Length: 186
Image (cartoon, rainbow, N blue to C red; front, side, top):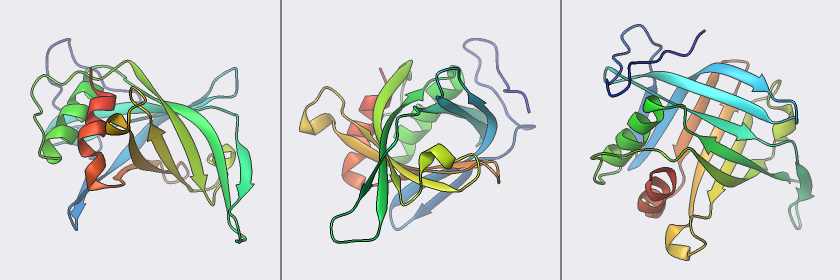
């Protein structure tokens, strides 16, 4: 399915775009986006582009997962985590609208939010190897360092089920709201 775009400065009305599922439970705000495109770049990076309609507006972004996964067993456990890196990437006005919607739903000032072009993140696969996300539902956590200060640090859960064509952007902790929006917006 092609990515829908709007003229610059015009909020896209997405009546024909698939819906973004918004879940607000126990104070948390979680999104489930339809996956529009999955691309394997020459260097092995997997790029997942999501886009959908929420309240009549087109929201979207991309997440890149670099191919540098390192498996580590959790101390005293049979569970494994897989450490790597990635990036949250703006796809244009739809990402600006996503960041503004995120701020609004978090109870923050949502006026004139413009997404950064990209934001680097550490990524951990939680019991699932992200290198296999094209065949297996994969639960991950992204860590955004901001400017390196504790006040700008934030985390978010990303769950990718590429076989079903969905990617979830799930809130990790209410205390990360302000720094998360600050990390994603200019």
